[in-house]
Each structure stands twice: as C-alpha cells, then as structure tokens.
Length: 442
Image 1 (cartoon, rainbow, N blue to C red):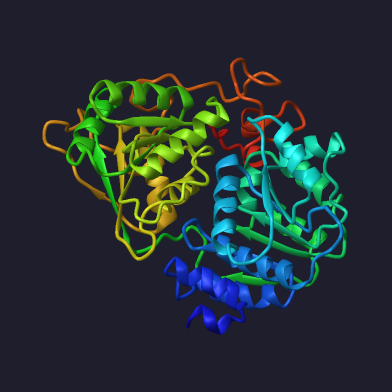
Image 2: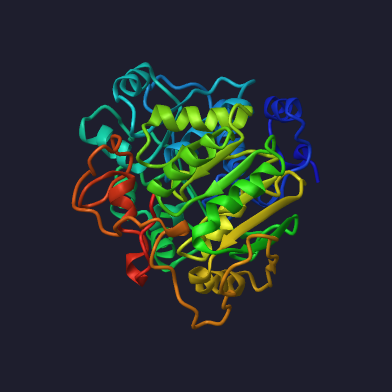
C-alpha cells in the first residue's frame, strides 16, 4: 500500500515525497481513510508507530479543502500531555503542510503567554496545546473554542495518568458538540472508554497491535549491577561509542541532574530534560540532542514525551520505571523507521521486582548479561515476591511522592492542570491514584 491509495490531496502527497515517505505505517493506513470521511476515531497506537501523521494528514486536508473562513478562531484543537510532544506535533504539521495554507500554533506552559495571545489574535487554524495552559487562556478569554470542527486527544492515557481528567472534561464541554473527535491512546482504561462514550459519536475503533507490545526490531538486555556502581557502569557503556546518541532514563529529576554532572565531568556531552527545567532549557537540550551537539540526553518519563528521533540506536534505563507500562513507552523511542534498536537496563538487586513486572508485561524473557568487572554482589531475583526499590537508582534518595499543594519552589511556570496545584509537578501527583501506583516524576 502507498500513501497515494489513501485519498490524500496532491499537496500532502508532495510533502510526504519530499521527506521520502512513500508507504504508510499500519496505524496510518487504518486511520487515515475513516478520518478523511469525517468519522470519530478511537485508535490504539503505541509510541513510534507514526500516529501523528495518522491524524495530522486528514486534519490538514480537511482544513485546506473546506475553504477559507472569515473567522480568526481556531478550527482544530489538538491536546497533548506535554510541552515537548506539542512542539513535536507542531513541527510535523509544518512538514506535512508545507504546500498547503494552514496555520498552527502551540500553547503550553513554561513560557510567556504574550506571544501566544498575539498568535491567537492574528488568527490560527490549528491550536496544539497542553491542557493546563489552554485552561489559562480560556479563563482569561484570550481563546475562543466555539469554531472548533476537529478535536484530537493524543496520548489520552498519559493525560489521565498525569491527572488531566478534570481539565479534559472542562475543555470537552467548551468545544462545539458537532465536531469530529479523534482519540489516540496506547491503552484504553475505563476512564478513556467513559470519555469516548460521553463525548464521541459512533466512533470507529482501530487497533493495529496488542496493548503493551514492542517492535521486534528492539533487542532487550539487562546488565545486573550494584546500585552503588550504576554510574560507573553507565559511563563504561557510553564510552564504548561516545559519538552514539543515547537516551538515558532516570526515575527522578534530582537523579537526572546528578547523572549529567557526572557524565559531563567524565568528558561526555550530556544534558538533562525534566519538569524543573525552564522551557527554554528543555527546548535547547532537545535541540542539541537532535543535532548531535549533545550525545547523551538524560530524561524523566513525563519530560521525554515528544522526543522523536527516527534513528536513535539505544535507550538506557538507568533506573527501571516504577510502572511496567512505562518501559514500553520508554523503549518506543528506538527501533523506529525500520532501524534496529537496543533497550538496555542497568538493574540493581532491589529493582528485581520491577524487572519481573516488565518481563511479565512483555510476555518474554530479557537477556541478563553481567559486565565483567561490574558483577553484582547479590544476584537478581525474578520471582513475583522480589523486593521493590525504596530509593532512586544508584542509591539516590527518591523525591517525595506527594509534594505539597501548589507549585514547588524553583519550578517553571506550569503547563498542566490539576484540582490542587497546577503543572507537571501537581499533575504528576495524581498519576494512577485510582490503582495506587506511584506518581510519575518529571
């Protein structure tokens, strides 16, 4: 199958050809035709499957062929959980829509509202937003959603994890009832099903892979190591090819900063991206990583959303995620565009239970390969009763799971929404509270 067979306009096909895209991914092939027909969509799509184009291309075609209107109000709204993902979608929109006359802007926290207000006053077709800053504009009456014809909820499960459900309901009640709604989610928990039933009309359900599956192009390895020697082993692994782009996941913001300090002092060009960084710092770190000026990017789970590099060769879990499903999201950043990738995890004895959960979720074994000179003092336990870590990886003290109400000292302006305190920090504290899972930390 080719993009030519999906019913896309010549201008969009031309843009795709400019970037060498000729064959759609499974989610694109399944979602684009019904989306072009105007149907509501409930689509299961994992990270790295090309889901952005699955909604962006039909949206661009609809707006570019429906005729120009006199209104300056946005005609489409795309909601995303994080700033980085919003910026990534905006970049994709520019690429796919470079031969059509459709304008788009981003609205998220951590930056001044002034330029956003000016862009909205000039008029824009598409708004790509995080829920919290969108609520801010709604409250200040700088944004009118009454002309929205298409609503897209991207990574809806992650928005629920981050505590955005009250904001989502408020936004959904503010857009016209007569509209097209497309919801993309890696999983469909009951809360998402409820949202779909309440706010969508005869939605077409699309699923191209089983939940929590990973591409076969990714190989999985575990290096068992004592927590106190994790940093040294990480340096050893990274030094094997210091020019290779490597994405490293830390469970905590403080841990990410400590790792970057250590790696830079060891001669490796590295940067951190997490919720305590200003938006300018986060944007600069991501840009430097994509351009190769920085070869190691240390990230937390929430802040890593929007990292989209087609040929990222390796993802390293310095700390295993507290929730097994996040392993799938993390490693979805490698093994893309037909390229092989490596998911490498540095696992200490007290993370044995987390590794067991991941293996159980993936329904496959993960190769355990000790590194000579870094063998752990105690072997990993892979039974269900294995202990869970009490501290962050490498012996770092983990941050409190329930920060006080409001914005933590020194944090950037928030981009999220939660009933008590806003931003990634407050929203993260709501994470999976219904099933007592620990809060994500950005």
